Image 1 (cartoon, rainbow, N blue to C red):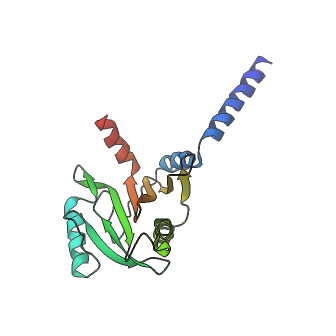
Image 2: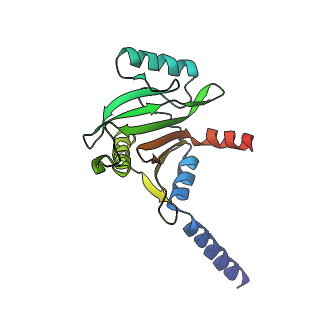
Image 3: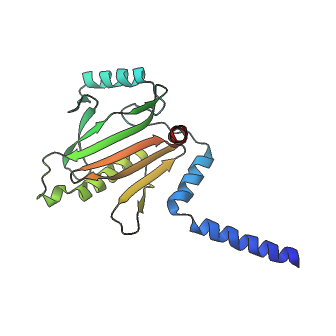
Length: 191
């Protein structure tokens, strides 16, 4: 009889713990536990790629006209048409750990953005980026937000690779593609 109560209480605690986990926490736990390693970024770039490989790939894509230099010294730029049909820019430059890419921040903007043009509002840009990334990485992005929904991000995980898409400021959307286990290791070293 005593074992029955312990088992019942343990089951209730386990059930309440798992139900308290957010959809994102469940996804992260499931994907990291899968052991899958997914390193694909875009344009032949990959997480884990060395600095030398990154520069060689970008140089070759520059010669083909796919990529150009961005507006700052540390950015690569690609012109594209979003799923909505609006033209825009994609700018990126990775972060390296031990000479290898572990984080690829990407910034997206619409060409011709202005604060009074509602057709090019940042919320529409965020929708466009999510649709673009669903074409590139597949469906499965979930919305994650704080309680008052003032900060909204769309997140997807495939094994070790986490993709987050969020509003950076009034005219730009940022995406971060991360090798999550490496990023956690770097964060632990820093603290």
